[in-house]
Image 1 (cartoon, rainbow, N blue to C red):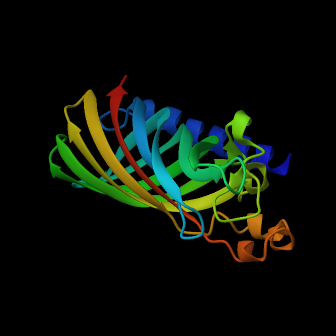
Image 2 (image 1 turned 30 degrees about the horizontal axis):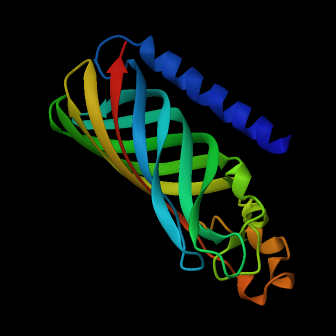
Length: 223
């Protein structure tokens, strides 16, 4: 419930800022945008055999001119991120790959600089991420993680609130822009997982470490 209240409050705050920016007159950057993109990456870790997967991201954004060629970008995005992990049905089975999925919302606040007027800019800044459990595909929940005496369902309890940093390039025209972004998770997304007592099931599962690494390409249309 506490996470839901935080999520709702953050979304309402961002939406209020977006609406206020949309109502301003003057600079064409003070407009509401609807954006969507394809993500590629996932949770990177040295503790499990993982593979990058594709997902999606979509939400609301706005740009505000602050001084000369400097801009501020803020918005909210809903996303689905997948990571592949090597699993086995039994110790002697062949290795398979299960998709672990987390969904949620990201709130971003970027500072940026216009390189070529409204046509090209670079941005960077922090992202607050609120996410769900890290759920494996249902048919693989009881499979074992390769190299561990852990089942796939044992890895669900990742941290629910995480902080990322991102770099962004935007290119296009006044009403339509394409954007390319890479974001990296600052904190250990497995910190909550380390409090689940997994080392009691397998001593190798102590002090797990993982960070989000995500590349995204998308389009934004300004209303």
